[in-house]
Image (cartoon, rainbow, N blue to C red; front, side, top):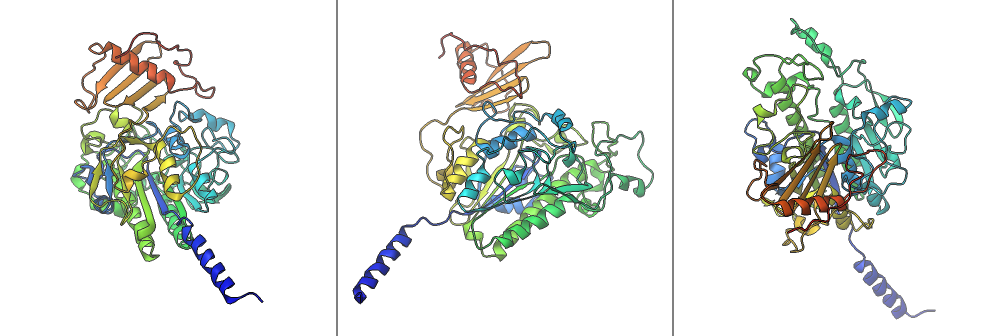
Length: 494
């Protein structure tokens, strides 16, 4: 028989091993708005749109004032977020609506290849439950890009961005299976010559079941079902992307005199009797969903160990009856969605984690979507691929002083447009359909609204930025660019 001391010694050794084991990382709730402008939240300066829950989240957490989306439109931006590669290296570099014709269901954008290293896959391999509820945009039905094939245990929502134009869809998708949504089939793109005379006629532009209400219910259930283990909840909302659709009762929060005339569909998407009120009400509806998620987190006793992230996939829309000028949607920033100026790329970012993220703080650290994968994996203790374009921001989230090392430049490309941000300098190059090239150089430290082109005053800096941009990209067969045949300049730089 072994002596008692042997068992005591073994027990103490085991306890030591267990105590040295790393603690599980935080739960992660990541809410991604769709086409939300930099200044459309109260905590980022809006004086017209009501966002009390997000304002509270910012008050108790950290705002990032120099945060950039992965691109200026939906699909490439989401690809950057999930893969940690900017659009000079990413697989998806544009929306490519023509891809839907290749899918038997007529849905979907260019799919992520099978086995793509994604944020969800890295967290899943670390033992996280992973769920996504909302709008995907990185592969249609039956394709390799479907979320349940890219690291998510569960997905429910729109696979196709075009289908997500209608917030009252006839069907959605759940882990590769079609699910009826309870609405009749109608187009999200209609134009009328005159305003309907009755509310019944306006009702033809909406349905019975509002898709965001289905998404939030699934997300709440996901939290409750996985409260006893680490989880990653990705909530890519389709709000406030047009068409302008919101339950009638939500409109009551906004003045009736905002809208002097209805929107008849002249700039695409669906008509609406009260377009400005509808747009603001959509954002407030999303804010309410954020409040619901925070409530479930609190009810499950998870607040102290849950990192909550809120941001937007790109700048605000110019279409569908939205009115960015009325709402001052980008503040002083130039440009809207689709533009590689600041207004198309700079988006709000809020991080909230009680006891870890310093409350009531703001960070001016330059950061972007490619930083999420290394940052969240670092916090979760998960391995992630080498060669990413992003940097680990976990120290900033913990309130630690930023390291002095200069971050890699931020790079974007979209069709015939390129942009590069390196330190104080922002470079934008655009090529017209006729091949005319224009280049602009801005000093964002002194000119954050990109009002003064310094290209002629700083020719060497212009060449340096162009050369740096050349080094930031690889050609893509799927997304050919006028810059594919370019050779680096041999001119001197500053």
